[in-house]
Structures are given as structure tokens and as C-alpha cells.
Amino acid sequence: MAHPLHTSLAGSPPRPFARDAGGFDAPPRVPGYRFLRAIGRGRRTCAWLVFDLNRRAHVVLKLEAAPGASVLHDGAVAARVQGPHLVRVLGQGHTAEWNYLAMEHVAGGDLAAQLGQPMLPTRAMSLLAQAAEGLAQLHRLGLVHRDVKPANFLLRADGSLVLTDFGLVTQAGSAGATPGTLLGTARYIAPEQLQGAPAAPSADVYSLGLLLHEMLCGRPAFAGETLTELLAQQLIAEPARLPASAAAVQPLLDRMLCKDPRGRLADADAVLGLLGPRT
Image (tube, rainbow, N blue to C red; front, side, top):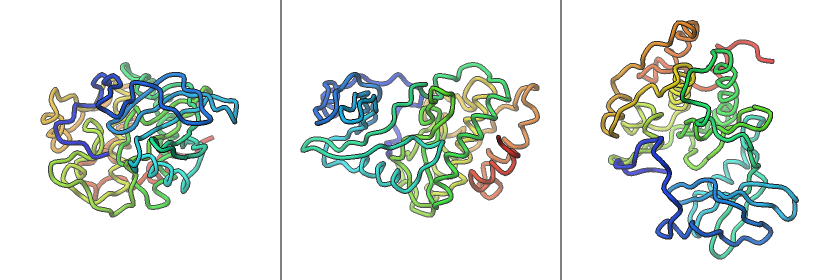
């Protein structure tokens, strides 16, 4: 979703569920599901772990107060793309109060919880390849995710990585953000997104490069204390060089983090092409 420029930085503690955000502090009522606990929220949506009474299994419901369109957009995108590194969408529906999307319950949590100290390069590159595979499923259809960040990659119990949250997905070439809005997450947004450029897969590549840098260094590439500082860093600053243990990855990272999208790898398939054969 588009956020006003005064939106807090990524990584800020989530706000509690509150009545002023659509009544998300109490379990909604959706026939066929037993609500267990709230597991996340956005500005207009909430996510709950529920028990699906028909499947007899735990799933996640993403809900939005009707007549919102974000969850319906998620479902429409999910109907077009599928793959082993995309979260599985099981169905969608609506009640008088809610639009909802049922998704697989990914038990391993999000990638953000794995960060905070440097990863071994082999582990980071394995996760990069899986993340790029998920993004490639979108890029091959001419779609752009526009919110690539650690919290939007989830880990299954077997350790495999899946991309989620299609709320900002749009067609490549569509109009960028209007002045005064931030479309995406400040800590991971591409410079041209801040300047209102049309959506392009190369912007996802830049965000993925910032994620790779963070995995290898154990801290975000840009750590501005205010939103203004962070956005300025995205526009003009260069991230620190990788540690010696990961120096072999630097040429790839440089091609992902080029400020000028004309010099950047064009899409996720271009990233995969430089990673070599995968098993």
C-alpha cells in the first residue's frame, strides 16, 4: 500500500490491534474458521492464525474490512502466479464485514527474524536463489512486487523460502507513486521508486540486493535514524563493502545495487543467471 511520507521506518515495533484500525483487536467472525490468534497487521489488513473447519488444518486468514480492495487484489495476483517459492493461496471470500484470503500457514516465521548477525555466504546465497525464484514468477508475467523486504519472505518448516504479500504488485510500466507518498518500505525501496518512476522489475532487484547485503553483513545496508535520512541514503549513499568472508559476492551485489536502473540487473531471472546451476 502507499504510505504517507511520515510513515515510521521499517523495523519499528508493530502497533497493537486497535478499534481505530477497523476493530482488529477482537477476532472477526468468518464462517468455517475458528480464530486462534492475531499474527500480523497492516494499515488496512490483519492476519490471523485460524483452524479451517473444512480442511481440518491450520491456515492463515488475511482480512480487510469491506469494501476494501487490497485483499481482493492479493487474491487476483495469486490466481495468476504459482510456484514453490510463492506462498500458497487456498481460497478467498467475503462476508458482510470482511474480505478475506486463506493462505498456507508457513510455520518457520519470516526472514526478518533470521537477521541481526552475518549469515554464512552459502546460507545467504541459498536464500537469495529461492527469493529470486519467487520474484521471477512475477517478473515473467510482467509483474513487479514493489515491497521486497525480509518480512515478506517466510520460511517453511523444511527451511524453504516463500514470497508473500502481493498487495502492491502491479504491472511493469504502470505509474509510480505520486509526490508526497512512499510506495513500498523505506529501508528497502529503490531510488527510482522515490522519484516516481514507472514500476519495473529492476526495482525489485535493488530491494533484493539490500536484503542480500543485510544477510551477509548482519545489519541493514542503510541505517538512517529518521525517514528523511534513510530516503536520502537510498538516493545517494553507497552501502558498506562486504566483509572479506563474502568478498566473492561483491560483483553480483554491485550489479544489483546500482543506483541507476539502466546499469542494474534487469530482473530476477538475470540474478538467477549469475548464480549458476541450482540443485
